[in-house]
Length: 234
Image (cartoon, rainbow, N blue to C red; front, side, top):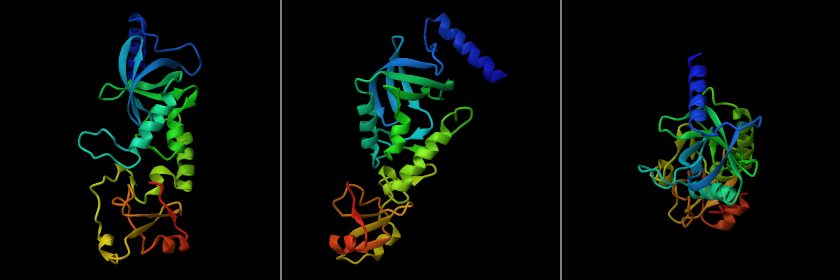
């Protein structure tokens, strides 16, 4: 009852202040102008002349601008993908219930030319389903279904074994694990088997070599390929 009353008060305040945050269509999407892509799951937009920070609901991308964390694998790709979708597009927000988080950011589902940015990030393996809190669970089943397919295909964040954790992502500081000590000095190629069964090998020059946990070590790329592993694209 209290939550409904608060939502009603917020809506009245918006109307009195001239803000058109609630639209007349069934999905209640708000047209906005994107001013900046902060990272893969956060943008700055202008709505009714006011600059707002928007946090994408129900997804979490690796960190690229966190003050206390290093740049994480696939964070730049997530930011670029979101930016490419939003650039020159008709962007709309579907606000979550309660609308703002504790940092004052708008919580929203984001659309570019009618396409869900959240769904696209999940499909590409550039985000995980996260921060699932009632009552903002409208699309969680749909998002989780897309995530399962990305996991099955072993794309993006799902190509790195144990990179995605329940509370976030393994940082670049988590390296030199005990299994690293078991390698032969001449066999430095890491063979990684993802949770979906995908086999990928990483060279020392590769971007994600340090954060990759090896199930197997190989001395040559041919040896890795003969064992059914494919080379990492990064």
